[in-house]
Image 1 (cartoon, rainbow, N blue to C red):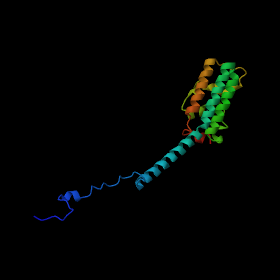
Image 2 (cartoon, rainbow, N blue to C red):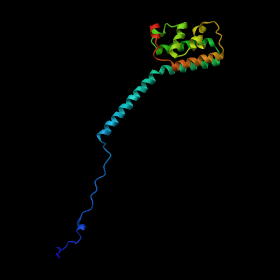
Image 3 (spheres, rainbow, N blue to C red):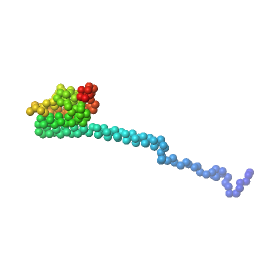
Image 4 (cartoon, one colour):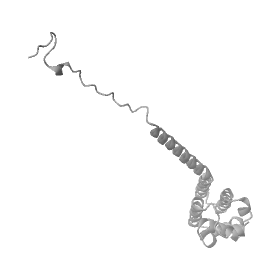
Length: 178
């Protein structure tokens, strides 16, 4: 047998160093793809926020009209003065229509043309053939004959129109009122 030099052990595995583990992979900084994805996400959030703010601003006139209609309704419930309520209703509806449509399309409308416009822009027939017909001349009568139930129906109809009217006029209305 061969002789081992002094100071060495007979086990060659004992001379090996311990296993070297790699360092833990860090999650920061992220790879470039994550930065691009985050940037696109921020752009999308910004764009959606912009659209929501625009929509909120565009419908401000509707919220204001609904508050005014509610105030007129509350005043009517206290006073039961249908003549004053009808005159105020007519003003609110005209202001709301002027906010939604051009002055040329709305300002000159009176009587049956006005109720036809409300019917067509609100997809209803209740202004020309129903309770909404009271908006034509009731504010100008000396003593309009409307019951409290009729007034409540008229308030509901006006609230519905404010909520649901179309921003664009239906086909045929542009030419008729241009």
